[in-house]
Image (cartoon, rainbow, N blue to C red; front, top):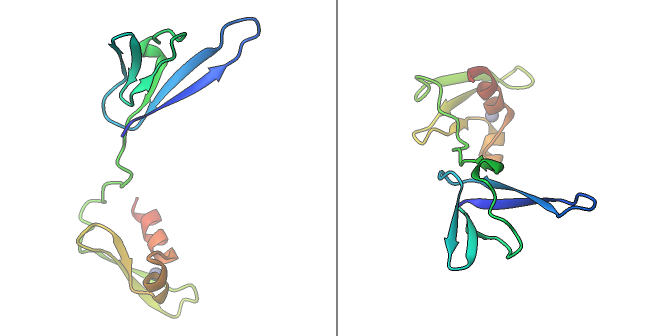
Length: 125
Ligand SMILES: [Zn+2]
C-alpha cells in the first residue's frame, strides 16, 4: 500500500512550500480530480483547498522493493560449515525449501537467528 508523505517548508514571508513523496506501491505518482477535490495518487492523499496540484516531477517516488534479496546462484541445498565461536564445534547452515537460512546450533533453535547465519550471509553476498 502506497503512502504519501508531506514535508512543509515555512519560508519567511512566503507561502508554506510543500513537497511530497510516495513510498511503496508500484504505480508512479499521478494527480486526480474528483469533483472539486484534488488527490495525489497512489495513496489517496487529499490536497487542502489552498494547495495547488504539485507537478508530477516534484513528487518523489520510492517504489516498493521486495526486502528479500535474491538467493545466490545454486544456494538451495548447499550446506555451509561454520565453526563455533570457541572453534570447537562445527555448525551447518543451509537454505531450507523456502529460501531461509537455517543453522544447526542451539542459539538458532531459540532465536531463529545466529551469528553463523550472519557469517554465511556476509560471505555469500
Ligand atoms: Zn548458528
